[in-house]
Image (tube, rainbow, N blue to C red):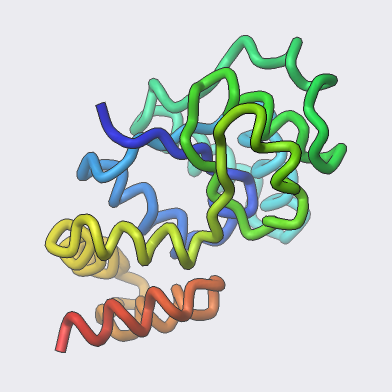
Length: 183
């Protein structure tokens, strides 16, 4: 079984990073996890951002279909026991229930080490997570970059342009390291 990583809402918010991270998961480099709380928060956030509600429903539905085992259930009774940021207690509770090894999040400060230690879970910034993927699975990661960028048709996307999107999405160190390996 692949490495279990719980994806916080902020990690699956941007289209480019979501497409890439989930393409990596399709290759089996890790097992993605999320909860209904995360998906509902994602839907609300995307609609508030001005994304067409039908497109949001389609995107979240595609995530559910592609990864039917990603959805964590039965964590609700743990939420009140979590000691991280109030708004992210559902994330930690679901990660605990799923026996995730990491929570991938841009919001590292919401998960103080003291709230993670009892459950032997760590947090990792998406930039570091992707760098780890590149180190552990260089061929799969670089092929995923090619495949993901190749799926963009309107407009067509080169790998370099896609790496630019990942930089803007908050993963500049990964984009730089991947560009170096592609040279």
